[in-house]
Amino acid sequence: MIELIKKIKGKINLTTLALVLFGFVILLPVFVNIFSGQRESFLLKELTLNNGSKWRADELTRKNMEEMQINVKNLLKKESHSSEEYTNAALLLEKNINEITEKSILEGQAREELYKILYKIMLEVKPLKKGLSDPKKEYIKSVYDKIEIFYEYFE
Image 1 (cartoon, helix red, strand yellow):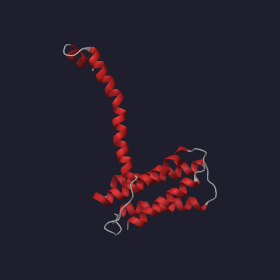
Image 2: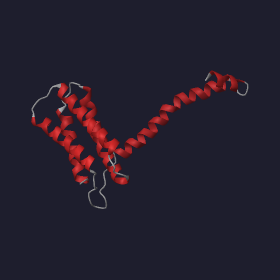
Image 3: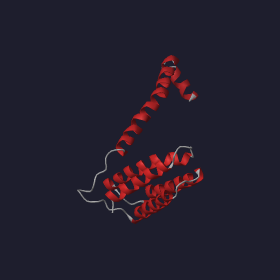
Image 4: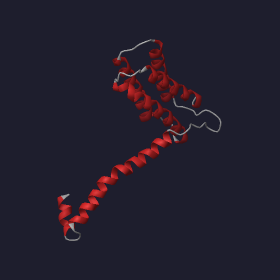
């Protein structure tokens, strides 16, 4: 960086350079927020069917969604859980989601629709993982509801 400044020093004054660097540092987070906001707004859009039919999920995706459904259903059966149980459940959910995102062979619109569901699940998993003292059973119920949405849109 210093070498670059030395090369530029003769061509522009240091005040201009400082203003350009300052502007870059200030505006970079703005651009990051804009682009990540666009991605987030896309992921929160309504789901669509495949011309009125369910999307076809690959075996790996179905297996992981089923595992998530079973694990969450088991959590919902018990009245209370330790913070550690919720954290472990969140870690298992993340493992399943990561496996789907890394290895699923879905492409195109089917993949986009799947990612909308996974993103909504992840929004509920984050508080579970933190181990906060608020009522986590609500998050578990919400995760279960999001998993059920998968079965409304995929076969």
